[in-house]
Image (tube, rainbow, N blue to C red):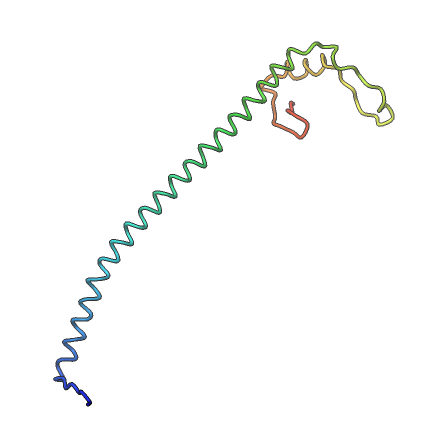
Length: 124
């Protein structure tokens, strides 16, 4: 048995208009969902960025505290604890004793601190 439907010519345009109206109503709901999801994702991104910056700041602060703690320890070491070695005389490298270094760096003052090198703090 074969079923056939016959539509009036205006029925097609009415069906298309109602389908278009349904799509628009659905897209408003999708827009709201998109705005909510976008807001949540943006908020999460801002929170994660804040946490990363906070952790980075704390690491720098710890590193700075460690270097300042190391300088105060250097002040406690007696001057004659660092014997001058004459093994490298053929390299024409200058040798400095601890007293000279302390005087040149203003007793390893933070104002003369340039940064951290591979072998420790670097002073000007």
